[in-house]
Length: 64
Image (tube, rainbow, N blue to C red; front, side, top):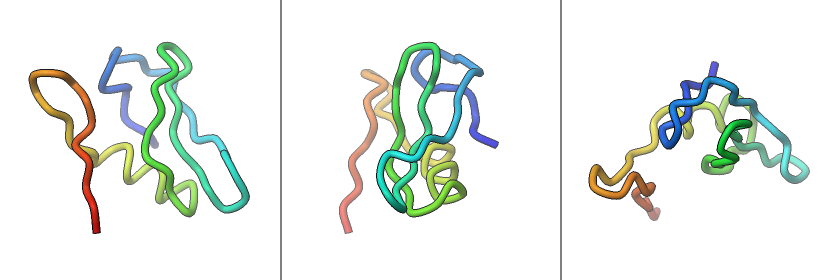
């Protein structure tokens, strides 16, 4: 189950398919989207575990 939105604290979030084999979580209140995962579970995990910069609330980019 996706956690509430880290940007607006909204609880209306859902996993949506954005391409064949590509999923992401979208907040239905502020329309923020999470990182793309290769499955619904992968998208939820990336949404729930992403790190945000405390001062801006923007997502920390992780490469590799």
